[in-house]
Length: 623
Image (cartoon, rainbow, N blue to C red):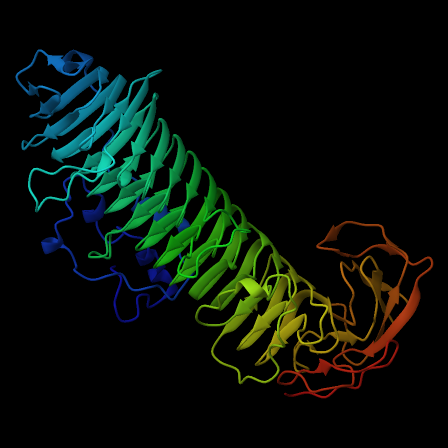
């Protein structure tokens, strides 16, 4: 299946088509080139369905290149660099002053130093050109020090225990005015594999540090990369399977940018330790970013607390079609969105810890969390997409505005909005097609604006949802423009009373809305009419409303909020089920299935507008 420019994905089964290269072996075949005359000549269409199988995605992109790490040492050609020239005893190597040219497939072991010159691979024949760097240091004041200008397939092997260095010119001098390549310190026109157990330091002083015009695979090795622009770029794809990457780039740290073929332009990380510092994006892909393993530490634009220019948007992980995380550890601090896609984002596993100057995770179309953990430690809005779905996993969000926002388009944070009370939101807009679904897992939200916010509908059918809502009356711990339907799971939402909205009265699982007022540090016990404790909660900020729903809440019966005492059992986001009531006093009483008296709320729901602590709710539905 290919991406379609009409609907992209027809059914959830077709979700595997999200991943670049999964429709055929073309994108990963070692003979593939980036000739646009044979490509689809169309950019990939952003996906709409986030229910994509990570396992199928990884299988489809598992082996872009054949292994280049084994060969017969007796077939090696030795090239010794001597400062201003080189020596080699084989007809396949030409030495012209400080320029060394390899003209045929084979294995070439390079050692020594070239003060100002180039090693050029110009091999028109079929077969792999393998360059083994074994204590090689090459610098150029005019061009790229190591360039594969013509090769069927290319590989750079870092000899075990060796230390190697490449440094290019700050301004390239081209013999032909129409030529604009090479344009990186390590440059290849062919599929390129980096492997071995040695170390390589690459300085890209003019543009990129490492670049392939076809695909690029990093199997192993210790890479230290500094670049004026992009750190490591594979035009057709960039795959990191292992190794240690320390990248500092003025542009993007890792990048794939083929926008002429929908099966290409992806970045996949399945292993390795990656430390990425970028002036622009950490990982940028025209199609998909796929993380299935490894450890990523990504900082962009100076990090989540940095101020950036109005025209800058340094993001962490960016896949124009999709971002899929199925394993590994992902740590991101980004001046803009930490994870972003114009299409979909799916977190199916792994541990994701992110801080952002704007959204923690943003997908224009759909965001799905089905496993692993997502911890948003700082954000303007925590999670945002037109469709947000959580079916499993652990989610924790800290946001200055909305915790989760189901809404279309981009909502950028302005510099003035950080630290200020957000403007009143919700309550007046007609519901759209956005949806917010919690079907399982644990979701804990700490929001300065609306906590659980949908411009359309919302539902809770399983799992645990804990909302530490806003303190200002212009926002609510729950804000759903359409119907908020609860059929299962457990909900507690604590926040200001001014815009506090309840689930729909028609929900199969009932709720109780209590106008309890208190301060940060309060322990709030939810009690039934016989004094049995259903839940206990520790507030983290001042509050005026408490909304609780679980299978134990029976519609029409009375419940109380008692403040005081202690929590004695385990808690999730401040919510527990065991507590000591010594010293606690009843602060509010409410009837299950009704909202407190005050302004009307969401469709079939209600808002708690003006009831005093201790007052029984009567409630009115509708906006």
